[in-house]
Image (cartoon, rainbow, N blue to C red; front, side, top):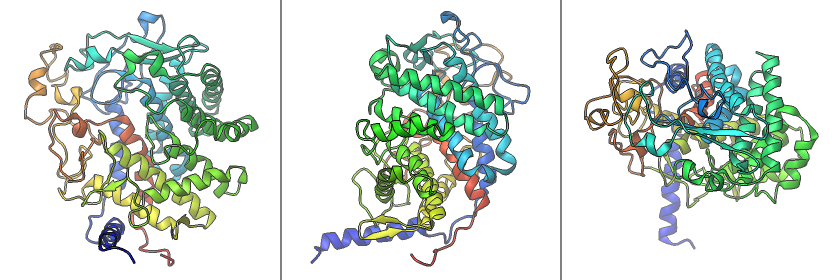
Length: 502
């Protein structure tokens, strides 16, 4: 007989599941508008010389000499968040996730497909520059410690634009394999729109992966003082090698990558840390991505990855599995301990939606111990997270800047919080920006589409304070998986309450 405490826990989980799956009494969102704004955010993060069709007009050219000290051209790419450093590891992951959204949900992007591909290309163009030297990947531009000690616009920055790289003497299999994944995924995105560019991306992905696999090691060991603690690889490089091979298999259909994945499944830990997915840990993503081969009837060779994926999906479903590292707030927000919680919300929701589509195609349910979940349930849990971001939460606040009537106004972002160059042509120095950082006034420039870190615990609270960067800072890798989610729900805004079997 179950104890009273156990019964209460089960009842609470069941109630939470009902909350997550309920579509009653929530606003009908304009997912197409949110998609457009999410893409627009990336224009606000651009580094380099801005194109004539730049729509975020308060931004100007910046970092036009990046790479010059090393004799290479490293202009372009994206600033990762609210600072002015270009970190290659999260930029590559951002690129892979934007591309995955276009690959799986491209038809749902509609008129936004072109601008989404432009956002991907801004990144892949940069990654091609960063990998132009054989057996070398340039992985960072900017001294993070010096940059973080200043509060200045990217157009004004005068901190060192130090260049960091991995090579045979200083390996970085993690960042190199993620870069290979990004280039391979990008090659699929441009296969029809620009076949020649697609081929160049794939050829480069193959060579970069060979380098990553041949010269093994973590980049945070080779470049510890530069990349840590901002983007230290805490989970090792093994997952990125499998992740890179999975994307190269998908992009090239070469048997060598299929064999590599199966041969290294155990050695590289495919089933490790399966409840994680983000710029540092790819395990869940690996299993979801490879499971598509099984569920679409293409390759039962990878059946073990589907088992891993099923187990992972079950950990995200309250009332079915209570995983110690996955919680939900009273308002229904998925929560994991750490900073910038929305990165987990968007990336894990994307995996739920992707797997729902694969399972739906195969007409199967996800087995979860003595229970199971249909693709409809997975989609509705993912949609509940998207709706929470857009305003269906206890604060009735959108966590996307510029969407809805109430949204964060004091985001932790240098360019957004300082007067634009057009409003204040004179340079604002490193320490002169401190007055703007400490001000309680709203940011003068709206970084439309930016999704911030959001509530940092299970209380659903949000301070909207610039200094609380864990909650108020946007990042490219929060927005990247959101593109596919918003595209899908813009085409399918009303999900069925049940598939008839729940």
